[in-house]
Image 1 (cartoon, rainbow, N blue to C red):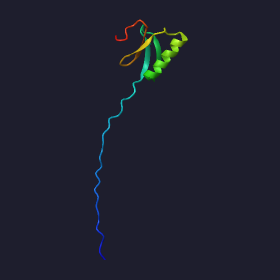
Image 2: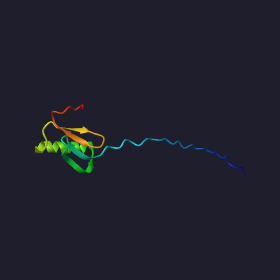
Image 3: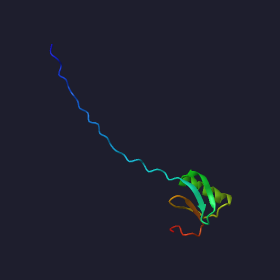
Image 4: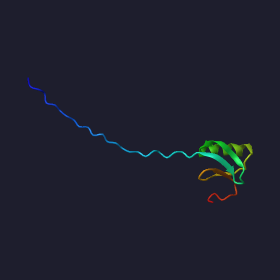
Length: 86
């Protein structure tokens, strides 16, 4: 009896390299522009810090119009009259 022909398939494995997505920045320290500490504890995302700032504005602990300035290792709450571009 005749053998059936053997079909050989060579599969090449294509490996794609993907860079890891950028990590979300975390800030363990949030200070007022005058140096007082607003938050010093568990690291926060920028979004979490903004929510905390909104709550503080609502409660009257921070002046309306204050905003977050993003620094390399901390967030700073700037007063309403501060220059956002500085």
